[in-house]
Structure formats: C-alpha cells, structure tokens
Image (cartoon, rainbow, N blue to C red):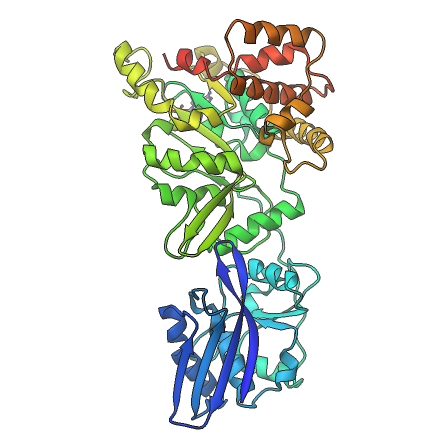
Length: 503
Ligand SMILES: Nc1ncnc2c1ncn2[C@@H]1O[C@H](COP(=O)(O)OP(=O)(O)O)[C@@H](O)[C@H]1O
Ligand SMILES: [Mg+2]
C-alpha cells in the first residue's frame, strides 16, 4: 500500500513543501529512505520504529520504502520524523489516509512516541498557509507560535498516540491560542542615564527616525557603547507584520518562538567571521545581519573587525537581503537593518590627554576604517568626552527614551505616508530615484545645495545621502518642506567629517 503526507523542511529562513511517500509491500523487513536525506533524516528510521512500537502501534514487518520529494532537494534535520511516522501508519492502514488531505504534519519524535518541538514552526505555518493547506499538525510546544499564522487551523499534539486518536475522531483537538507577545526585556536602558552628549543623542534620534546607518567616533570612555545600547528604546515598536518577520527568523535560529514585541538589537563581537555576520554554511543559517532584520546591528570597535567580515556586509546593507548560493540552490535571507558602529579616533585606546599617536599612525588607522562600509553610512558623529560639569554636576535629568521615541514614531509615520507604495519604510532605505522624488529642495535650500556641490564639497553619492538625511531632519521637525537649516544640519554629519573626527 502507498500513502503520502505533506510536510515542510526549513531552507534558510523559509520552509519548503516536502511530500513524504511510503510504500509498504511484502518482502524481507527493511526500511529505506530515499530523496537526498542527511544523517539525521536517515536516523529517523530508528526513531519512527521505536516510537510506534512504544505507543502500542504496529511497525509493519514488511519492506518499507520512504521517498522525500522533490528528490533533488537535500533534506536535513529530524523535523521529518512525524510525517514519516504518520505516513507509515497510513500506508499500513492504521489511520485513515483520507483524513490527511489538506493537512500538513511537522515534528520530531522521541523513542517513546512523544512529539518534540522543532525550530522554525512559524516559517512552516506561513508556508503551509501559502501552499493552501487548511490544517497543520505540530508539536504541542510549537503550536502557539504556529498559530500566529492566521487563517490556518493549527493542532498541537504531544504524542504520536494522540495523533492516531485524532485521525480516528476518537478525541477532539484542543484549541490552540496564538503566542502571546514576548515580555518586554527586563530593563531597556534609558537615554536619560547619558549625561551631556546632546550631539550624539541627536544623531541617534535621526538614525532611529529615518533608519540611517550611524558611525560614532570618539575616545574610549566617552559613552559611545552606552549611547548605542539605548537605540532599541527609541525605535518604534514593530508593526504586527514586522513582528512576524522578526519572530520567524528568531525561531529558525532557535532563539524562541514568542511574538517579538521589540526590534532586535544584535551586537556581535569584533572577532565574528564573515559567515557569522551574513550567514552561510553547508546548511545555510542566518547570520547576525539577518537576526538584526527590522532592528539594529551594532558593530562596536568597528576598526577591529576583519576586513573580510566588513566586506561581506557591504552588499546586504545596500540591498536589504543576503543571497547565498549552495550547489544548485540559492537562498535569500532578509537583512533590512540599521547599522550602528562605534570606533576610537586612533588605535592606542587612550584618552586624548594620554594619546601619543603620530599623525601617520592616525592616518593608517583611519584608512582601515575608510573601507567598504563607510559609503553605506549616512551619519557620522563625533563623540567627545562629557564635560566635567555634565558628568559631576547636578544637572537636571536629561530627556528620557520615551519622549524621544514619540518624536521618532511621529517622523516614521510621516515617512510611511509619503512612501506609501514604495518598497521601503523609511528615508534611510530610499535609493537615488526615490530620494530625488521624495526629498525635493525648494527656495533657499536649492541655492545652499548648489553652493556646496559647486565648491566640490559633495560627490553624487554624498549629495543623495545629505538629501535623505535632511528629509528625516525635516520629518522630525514635522515640516513638509526641507529648510536650509535642515540641510545645514545634514551637511554636518557628512562622511568627509570623519577625517576631522578621527584626526
Ligand atoms: N555621558 C555619560 N554619561 C554617563 N555615564 C557615562 C557617560 N559616558 C561614559 N559613561 C560611563 O562610562 C562607562 C563607559 O562608557 P562606554 O559607553 O563604554 O564608552 P566608550 O564606548 O565610548 O568607550 C559607561 O558605562 C558609563 O557608566
Ligand atoms: Mg565602547
């Protein structure tokens, strides 16, 4: 007898539909799996056999052949166990196969017949809905996550025995509730803790408001890391669709399946490899930039990262996705993130009063920075050590993150209205054409820009970057038109100033 069951296998951060077929016929007892299974899939035979026998079900003493189609796709991991087990049951007449139409099955089995949770349940549920399945059977622990995909009936089951009962209508499925939002992180650090540093905070606010990449340059101990870590607290909370995207990626990476309420903030150490940053491997896994999708990627001590790692970030930062090719397959990982970077002005790591670096040493250090990444950075901001009075004095407390966030949210809403119909959500993502269309200069601002470009102070790329930034500054102020003051402020964050900042 022949039976087939639909399941899904993870491929990057997506799930691909896989059909499991099992053929049971008379012959010497054997169980073969074909269709490019990896070791974990082949070991599935032992788990399925033990799980069925330990659940008082029958494992047919016949010749069993399982095929995982399409046969040219490599199958990895233990997530096919449940589908294989259900398919063996259907092929040996232990469950009615008619009940499996329009139902997809996904889960790992233990030898006792319990169903174990898998990674990427949300990706599976979204793909199942997309492929037109009405019902999805998943491990009970994954059910709340899978139920985030609205419009799909999700059944969470704890053992193979229960699935058999369910398919025989001997037991009704328990209702599943979609995963609750993640609890907010215990204490998101607040901008009010940072004393002084008005310029750096302003730059952070602009970066958050327009999704612009920001580089902070300043001596050690000035508070760069401290300021950067306060970025999540001023970003607008993710919309539901964005939260789904964030959760889906986190779940595939094994970081939990609760609906994300905050945007991700990833701060990889500077020893990270290129693959760790952008993803890859023989079974490609998402890298830090994908884990930071719709949030922030923070590269502290930027100059210490390997050149290969920074080089690898270039294309994903520009395009908003990582393309990985493995054999005949090519995978796409989303990577729409805001880059935050911090570095010292020179390599000695001493405060300015003690630094004895020569001009040549500083220039060499600067050259390391002026690599591929700098053209992706819209804002460069110099962070000086806080003044004694600000640090020691009893200054009235600074503005808190909540107030800044309100302005950021208002500025983002203005951008969303303006960019309706465009594939980007904020000014920072606009390409040259969109910039010209949506960031139009009028009146005295035109003359100001003409003067700057005319004096050779701005390249074509720099011109677009300044326009985007000026658009965000005007959005923060609630202005429909870009004033020449907005333009002046934007010009102050130019790349050219990194030389001065770092010197
Ligand atoms: N402006 C500031 N206001 C309050 N505390 C500060 C400030 N700058 C630095 N600090 C203190 O110094 C510590 C080190 O700052 P850090 O952000 O690591 O500096 P950097 O990254 O520039 O080397 C912070 O954790 C904080 O306790
Ligand atoms: Mg630091």
